[in-house]
Figure 1: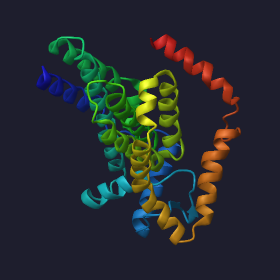
Figure 2: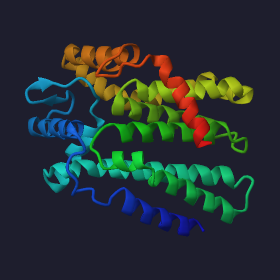
Figure 3: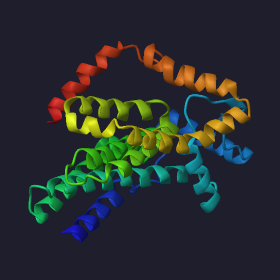
Figure 4: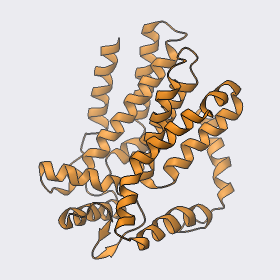
Length: 283
């Protein structure tokens, strides 16, 4: 059943996430802009500061641009190839969800049924319209989603499953690593959202809270996070790119979280009941 699940999900991802990947036009102006930024960085051989059309672009961090640049260096400068890392990343997210469901289900169910649940979970995610759209788009959202998914999967396996007393140390570094990837994908949201979810869950789990809040797991989590993000931040500081840091931290992160920008006019409290309603509806 394990190999059957892998083959099935490989087929589903190939059709849903890679089908038409290089034939569709840019989804909207956002994707065209992101491809243009990556192309400009490749032409200038600029790996630290995103730029486009002679202007600084401080709205987003550079991870998707780096991945597009690597693909172009290997396969040639074809704009649609910038979508390839997004499709691979979306496939990774499907694999992680299936793996997590199999690990959880096998504790209470026969192996066959556990693998069937893993196949169902992966299939539902791979066929979700939003997942398909962002897998076909050279934008930042799919990288953020997968980074948060992997961080929370590490928390679930390393700290919420009682049969593995020696794993929390390893999984604390795992959480920190993927929080760092989330930061390079879309800023502070990639760190704040998974840690907020973990913190809320820890409030309900006394035993988990006592394990994860020990000095060593916290140190490992923070160290792994810094290992991921510090090279880029060090490059910005060494180049004295305070203009980029001001735009990225001030506008793209803090102002977006506290004010209505880019046409998003709803009060922050609007989104919490909407999220709860969606979760209830999904359940």
